[in-house]
Image 1 (cartoon, rainbow, N blue to C red):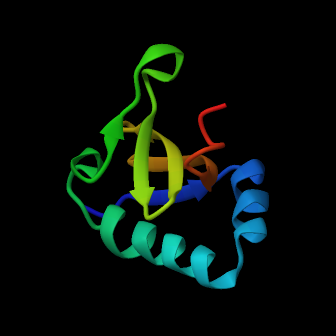
Image 2: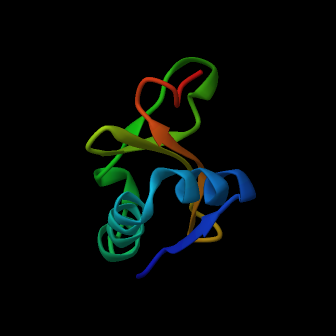
Image 3: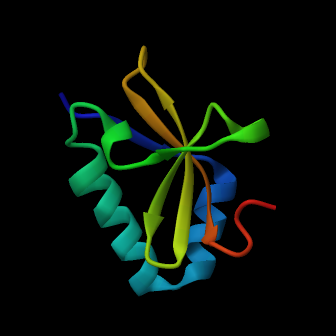
Length: 88
């Protein structure tokens, strides 16, 4: 079962700011690894605190904040950014 990867407008803008090579690595990771999993939570980590219902994926120094919807079989990428800035 393949998962659908969707991006918010904010995530799209943040991807463009990262540069082509980093953005390509992130897109490939999501399309080739996360979307192909039977459960995308295996590759990520649950966040705690006020963001407790969201998941994080780690790509080097970049972090992807996502919402996983089991009913729609969709991973919604909310934010993309460097690890020192993404959780603010």
